[in-house]
Image (tube, rainbow, N blue to C red; front, side, top):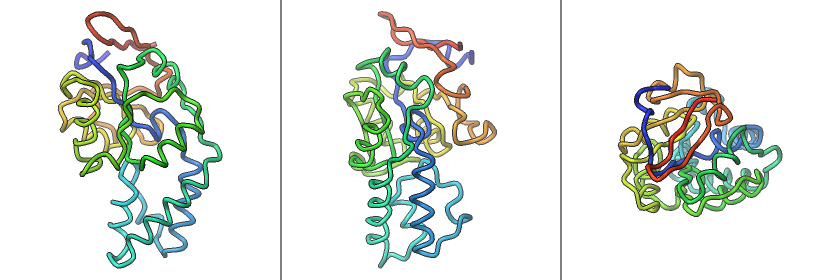
Length: 216
C-alpha cells in the first residue's frame, strides 16, 4: 500500500464511467455515429475520456454548430444503454461506504441517472454531474463540490478515477487519489497515489476514525 494512502479518509468520491460502471461499448457506438455524422476522425477523439461531452464538442465543432452537435450526442447516448454494467467491486464499495460515498462525473444529470439505473449499482445521495458545476473536469470544482455536499474537506477525501483528466482535477482539489486501470494504461495514471486493476482488488473498512482501504 502506498504510504500516501496509509491513512483514514472521511469520504470517498467516485468517478462513474470507467470507475463504477462500464459504458464503453455504448460510448463507442454513440461517439462513432456522431463522429461520422460530423466528419470527425478517430484521432480527433483520442484522449477525450473523462471530459464533459459539451467541452469536447466545443473543441471539435465550429461555434455556430456546437449547440446542435451537443444535443445530438446527448440524444445518441441516452438512447443506447445496451451493455452498461457495474465494474468489479463497484456495488460492494458503495454498499459498504453508504452515505460516506459520492459520485463526481462528467456526464449530464439525465445521462448519469440513466446509466446508473442501467448498471443496477447502489446510487449515493450525493451525485455531482456536469450540470452542477461551472467548470467540469479537469477542473477541481466537481470534487470540491462533492466534498462540500458530503460535509467534508477535499483534503480529507479519497477520489477514485480511471482517467488522467479526473486525476488532475482531484489532485488540484487537494484530494488523495486511487486509479483503476480500466480504460487507461498505468503510465497515463501517474498522478494517482495508488493504482489497482479495479475496485475488486481493494477492501473498505469503516470505523470511528474514518474509512480505510487495503489491497485484497
